[in-house]
Each structure stands twice: as structure tokens, then as C-alpha cells.
Image 1 (cartoon, helix red, strand yellow):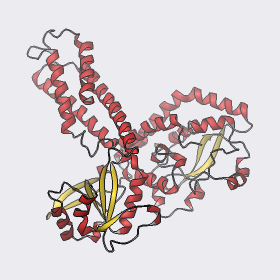
Image 2 (cartoon, helix red, strand yellow):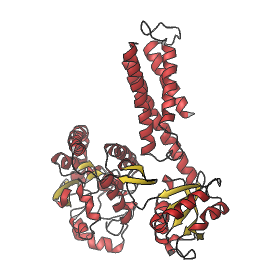
Image 3 (cartoon, helix red, strand yellow):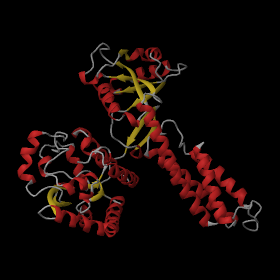
Image 4 (cartoon, one colour):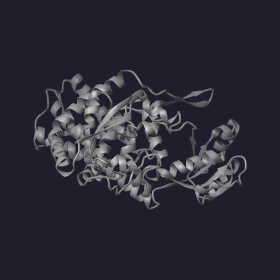
Length: 462
């Protein structure tokens, strides 16, 4: 309904601005349709494209990037079809009319989809709008899935009704899982799912389930109203890197390797430098005001310089506006001994007495990080990427965490827009590694938009 409302509203406004409000205005060309009929036709085509791209598929509604990508694809395809038809038929369709209506309508659709997503998240927080599922698989894999699903409850529609385990179906789950019903063995999952009114069985850790057993499970679910979801053991792989093919009746998931070099990386590098220069030109005057405020309120330099680890584990000097008193390093052990609100690796305090009055404001809205635009211009950092670590932090890393340095660290990233200092160390690492492995220009754009919201909210910044 809101798709139809938005498209109708935008197309009517675009029509009125371009052709006037008289429905009987003349033809667009020697063989073209009347403008109102053209507007109605484009609106209908656009609505059909939103359906053909499956932008309202229940599996992706409320998920964020993938939903927005499908909405954008519907707008682009509508524009392309109309432009091609206009060219072939010589209708002389106004380019300004299309360039105004479709991009504007797509942005408004984004806004409405975002509003629906927030509403849906609120409903899920209240325990509504969820699909009951039974997790089936080996105990360790099931426990890992439960932890993952609980960490991101706002971003998925599933409510775990119980688990079915391979091996010993009476095993006790790990203590941190909390109360969770072990329903029985995987073989009885179809019947047990019906008993707990589950809508899906999620089959995980399929290495312990034979092809014959998996097929029997699928057959047993026929006519029960219970669906089957297969969760592969490969985790943190974004959809663009995955393709599914069928070989000898087997659905095979192809996972493309991450790309750390090539044209897209060069494009990102160039876009970072141009964007940083433009942003610096815009915020240059506010940065001078911040520098003056720092100078007048506390003794010491305006900029704080700190060694960080960048691309390929190369060290560089990261710049920030100074937000602490000059003796902050000498007092660190004393202050952190009293209290630590960090995540085990990042030592931070919400009420750190070393932070100046101006620094507290700068930190809350991330204004202290503006000088890092200079690091982006120098090529040390990117606008979007993993958090640049301290050399001391890297000494605590294992080999997997070190993969974060396969890309340039960023001023913002998944870690920053997902909670910043409120996240645990493991969750911060997972988000940074996810970005490293699955980077795309589209993901960068989404992170930049989310950064604006995170900075204005000031959540997790201290």
C-alpha cells in the first residue's frame, strides 16, 4: 500500500510540475500517448517492477541492504524500460520528468521501507511478528547458532521454539544458552516441530547428517506446513559472493574469494581521496572553531598523534583532535584500575576524568575524528573500513583477527555503526572481519548513511 501511495504521489507531482494539471493536455509527440496516460503507465510498470524484483519477499523485508538494493533495482529497471521504449518509438519523453520522478520516488521508498523496518523491529522486541523455528544439528553448531541469533534479534524474524540434536538427544546445552528445550533427535524433528507449532526447521551442521537422512527429513515435511531451511557451515559470507548451482541433484553453494586488489579497490581508493577533499572543504571552518576551543580550554597541542596499524600491518600516525588532558597517558593505569567500561581489549571509561569538557562533546559526536580526513588524503586510511588498532592490540590477536589488516582501516565501519564501545571484543572483531571479506561499494554507502545516524545519536561513544 505504501509503495503504491509513494509512487502515485511522486508521479503526480512530477507530472504536474512538467506538464501542468490539465488531464487533457495535448500529446507528447506525433504518436505518443497523452501525458496522464503515460504517468499512469509508468506508475503501473514501477509497481510491477517492485513485485518482479521481489522487494516485498517476506524473507528480505526488514533486513536492510538487500531490500534497499531490490527497491533501487526496480527504479532503475523502470527508468531503463521507459527510456528504451521512448527512444524506439520517438515519443520524446521528457528526460527531466523521468530524472526527477524515479530517483526521488526511490529515495522516498527508502524512507518508507526504513519506517516499516523500525516498526517491525519494535514489534519483534515485543515478541510479535516472529516465526517459530526448531534448530536441528550437532550440539556445538546449534549452540553457536543460538548465540548468533540472540545477538542480532532485531535483524531476523525467528523465535527458537526448541532444538533437535544429532548424537545424544538428551545432552544438556551450554550454561550460557539459558533455558532451551531439547525436543529430541533429528529424525523426529518433523513431528516435534508440529508439536511446538514451529513454522520452519533450520538444519545446521549438515556434515553430521547424511544425504539420505536429509532427504528423508525433506520428504517427511511434505504436507505438514513446516518449511525447511538449510544453514551452511560457512559463516559471515555476504550474498553477493554466493552462487548456488545444481550438480547431480546436489545443490552446491559456490563462494567467491574476497577481492583485495583490482579495479573496484582502485575506484574506492580514488573515491576516498576525492570525498575526503570535498568534506575537508566543507568542514574546514568548523574544524578551526574546534581547534580554537581546545586551545582556550586546556593547555597542550590541538592535535593528538597516535601510532596505529594500517594496511599490511604498516604503522602510521593517526590524527585526532585532542580530547584529553596532556597527562592522560601517565594517568591511564590509575584511572583504568578503578573502572573499565571497555570490552576486554579496548580500555575505556564512560566517565573518564582525563577527558576535557570540550573533549567530552567532541567524543560524543565523533568530532575528534575529523582530522583523520588528512590520513585519508595521505592514503593511510579509508573513509570506511575496520577500526585502526593500536600496536599493543595486535600482539593479542590470532591469525584470523590479523586479516583485518588486508584492507585500509577506516574512519567509520561496521563496528562503529553497530554500537561502538558497547560491543564485546568478539562481536567487534566479527564485524570488522565481515567487512574485510565482503566489502562492496554498496556496503560502503550503507555504512556511511548509518554513520550519520550513529553520530547524531552518540550511542556507544565515550
